[in-house]
Length: 153
Ligand code: UDP
Ligand code: MG
Image 1 (cartoon, rainbow, N blue to C red):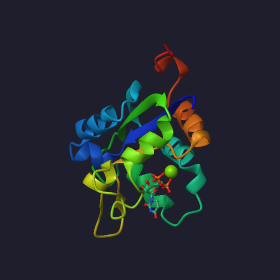
Image 2: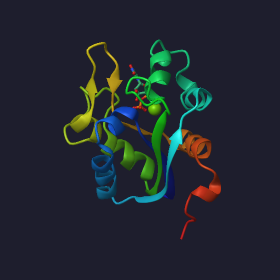
Image 3: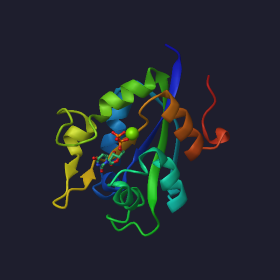
Image 4: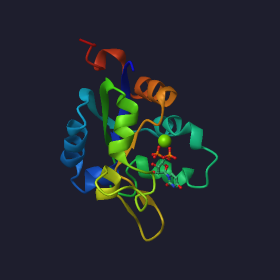
């Protein structure tokens, strides 16, 4: 298995609920290496491009509002974007992240520990993690310039 890179976003609920350190702690424990990190003000076009494959889903409009912090009071649309690198990084990160629906996420995963569904049905699942190799390559390149990522040692 070759070394992979994968994109992680701490979503606005994670930021608002002060879960950033806990999420990074879980990812650290997976043994992967953090090779890029920055706060990003997420434009509508970046949000829509990131989630382009879901644009026909009924939850898409709320997903764009969610990722831009509009449900959590972030008028500057801030989000923490990270790149993790390592053997099997994409699958390992997904395992630590847990299932999309926080109610179905295994206990001890990030979403199982910290995610919730709001009373109006919005998933608040704390973290984005790239789903597969094609998504990871596309998403890392969408959020980061090559020079913002530490070179492979
Ligand atoms: N999502 C949602 N309702 C759904 C499915 C997805 O609100 O029924 C949101 C949720 O925030 C999820 C994101 O859309 O994390 C992206 O969906 P995807 O199926 O790619 O899940 P993920 O890869 O994040 O586990
Ligand atoms: Mg996905």
